Amino acid sequence: MALHERVPSSLPQDPIEDPIEPLLDLRRAAHLLGISVKTLRDWIHHRTIEHVKVGARVMIRPETIRQFVTSNTRRATIP
Image 1 (tube, rainbow, N blue to C red):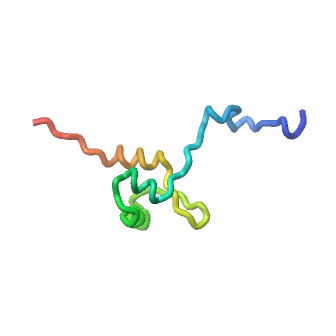
Image 2 (image 1 turned 120 degrees about the vertical axis):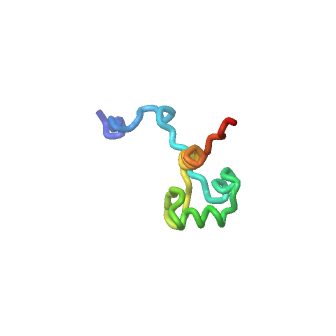
Image 3 (image 1 turned 180 degrees about the vertical axis):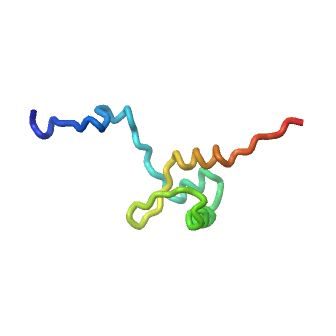
């Protein structure tokens, strides 16, 4: 088997099986949350929301937005 034919067994053979969603820049993440970029930067500074450092850039995983919304959703009380 040639070197270029080897596929590590820990990686999916088909990229569709385990797609990686693109990271969101702060402007897009803030827009999705309905807050300002400054507020999002404050949350990052105070470690209120998870973030990813890519070089000098700060990015947010789409899954982080979903988890944040889910964990901060409050159920309505039925009278």
